[in-house]
Length: 412
Image (cartoon, rainbow, N blue to C red; front, side, top):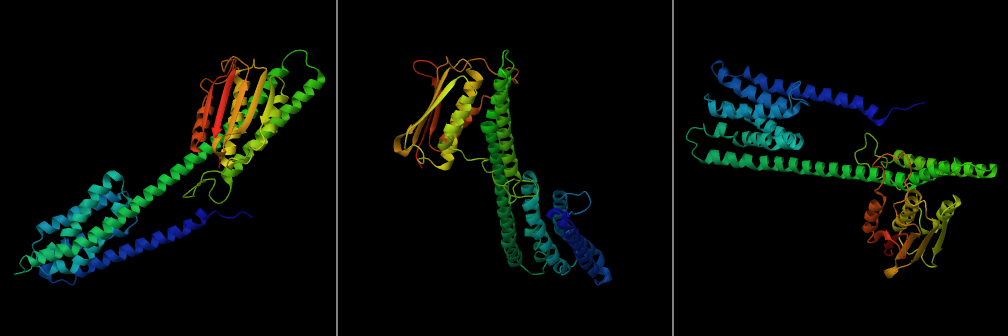
């Protein structure tokens, strides 16, 4: 029986929470407006702008969306401007502002937090500064109108409002920075995941597809015996199955529960795991598969004591270097007749490996009908991977002829 996804199950809860929040906002606005009725008849006209400004601030601070299509930035700017305008133009009894002032001040602090926390970068500063200014000077609406209050009341009111405004703005800015860091970490993880999948496609699938194409080209030559055709088809089947296995492993890594796949609805997808871990011990099998296709003849010389000197990640890189070199020989040096893979202990507990061929260079006949611009990034990517382990990859003409790919990796 199918089950609902977590996002589908949480949707009704979010809807109920939104309805409850809207009801609380409406109740708060009414609670701020009702006291107008209790004011003296001759003071109601003066109390009306105070109550309306406070109600507007409460609505903007509590409603999920301040009003229909009105954005938070527009609502915050309008509320702050209205509050500052009332500060300048109010001329009623000095006691009336004291009643609505706490409601409006708290609402401005809440609106300040939302603005600094949620608004886009270009609006967070200006709108947040305007709201903060409105909250900072709001106590002056009462303090400046107290008879015989002197300068002590305004100064005390400003200082009393300054600390909460700074604290709210600082807390919102801190959470905003954390959110930006989290988003950047998610972007980096997704980028690493894409790079990991690209490496898997390049290292394994592209290698097998290249072999399949070359085998198919060889099968089109005239004079094929039935036994050769059967062997050719068997090799094509095995290469195709290996390519499919690589694809299945990559898809499985992307879909694996627990966040490694980085699917929709996950906040922090981790980098996809390498689809397979192959190292120096797997080189003989790789060389045997490469040599089974016929020319060129390939030999592997692995010195005793080479295995186990590298970390698992460095061994995977070493295997990928050999795989890339052999694939390039297939693609670009079909005239090569002899290929040698050598692995020997290097300095500082590391490993030195080389892949050489006897062709004139990497400028042989490429695979036909390939898309222009395809490929060409394999060794560059491997150079970066080797450098991440403290090693290096070089490629150039061999001695006395041919082409040589060398890789040096330090020990674990």
